Amino acid sequence: MANTTQTPEGLFDIDGLLTDEEREIRSVIRKYVEKRIKPDVADWFEQGEIPAKELALELGDLGVLGMHLEGYGCAGVGAVAYGLACLELEAGDSGIRSLVSVQGSLAMKAIHAFGSEEQKQQWLPRMATGEVLGCFGLTEPDFGSNPAGMRTRAKRDGSDWVLDGTKMWITNGNIADVAVIWARTDEGIRGFIVPTNSPGFQANLVHRKLSLRASVTSEIVLDNVRLPSDAVLPGVSSLRGPLTCLNEARFGILFGALGAARDSLETAIRYGMERVQFDHPIAAYQLTQKKYADMTVEYGKGLLLALHLGRLKEAGTIRPEQVSIGKFNSVKQALAIARECRSILGANGVTLEYPVMRHMSNLESVYTYEGTHEMHTLVIGEALTGIQAYRV
Ligand code: TGC
Ligand code: FAD
Image (cartoon, rainbow, N blue to C red; front, side):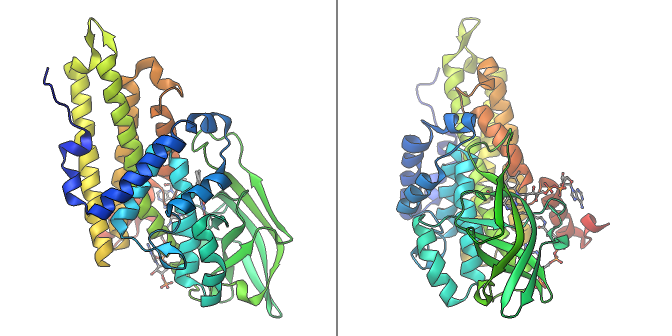
């Protein structure tokens, strides 16, 4: 047996493609995840409960909430550094990366991109520290992949706005202090900053999830919620608003999902080196090594694609369909890797003693949210043909 082993990342010499700052950020988040998330996350997952408020403050201290945004207490780091942070967080659990995505790339991004100066000053600094938690309400019970059909409505009443409708599957809905809600108005689709203690705002926990259990998911009911005129985001009045935020969050996912893949792969390699059957470690058998090789090559290719997309984003040239390519590839491959790793762990793989099946089950949600795998397939198809197959 060779006396040296390499990690999947080492095999691809990924470090040589990163700056000192990117490696440093990755290392800080990796240590946090090892110390704070990994020891407890299986229990949070099992119980379906997560100390989200506490974690938000810690993640704020670490500087990851809105870390890719400029000003207002945000670090303004590059896209690759942000992506690597998502990857490390998702190596802990997709639910932790979700917490950060929803706060930074959805709720904060909406205010940062489309809010007034007063709205930015009022909300962003406290969201960056984790003192104020946000959620993002786009999806509705009858409008998931097609948010353009939304029924939630905001009407003017004098200088006030009045909101009515239901949002579904909203991450952090029950624990958020503020919700960014997208609603139909006479002027198009607009975003509203809704304090969750507003009369008529109600969040109902989604129970019995089999995926993303270390994350709060809610239905939000808006019943005659009255808001002042300055609750509306002035910068956008079409679906371009939420879709712009989704581009940011999808970018985090195209790195993040690879974290779940890496953790699964490292676990399966460690396990295979120790688990003896027929007098040899199962890692010594060629069938197992083929699995390791196939998965590592896909993981490395995914990471190289993510880095390429990150550099395009830093150059300001990335297009939405390129983000779709990244989300499409990373989540598909991560899910396949987690499933294959589960097989290497045998029966042990179906328990929470190991992270692999937890990652696998989380990735089912990741496959569906932020645009389903099928929708990203069709966005890529549209880019190639000019035909919107999702409307045919
Ligand atoms: P369409 O008519 O093409 O465009 C409407 C307006 O939006 C603009 N636009 C975009 N802007 C920014 N980024 C993009 N990717 C954009 N795509 C389109 C477009 O220019 C237009 O602007 P304007 O100003 O001219 O009006 O829109 P459509 O209705 O045909 O969209 C089709 C499609 C498939 C792209 C869209 O419906 C879609 O992406 N569907 C998927 C829905 C989705 O991803 N939902 C996610 C909800 S949030 C979530 O899941 C959070 S999970 C929690 C976590 O992250 O942890
Ligand atoms: P549907 O749109 O009903 O799709 C069902 C199936 O039909 C899918 O396979 C889909 O790909 C396919 N399909 C739909 N239309 C077409 C078509 N034209 N052509 C081919 N196939 C099609 N939303 C938020 O707004 N905020 C959040 O914070 C949030 N958090 C979430 C957290 C979790 C854990 C989950 C699971 C979801 C979350 N979502 C959130 C919602 C998520 O974005 C939606 O579930 C997703 O957009 C898909 O919508 P849907 O579930 O209604 O499925």
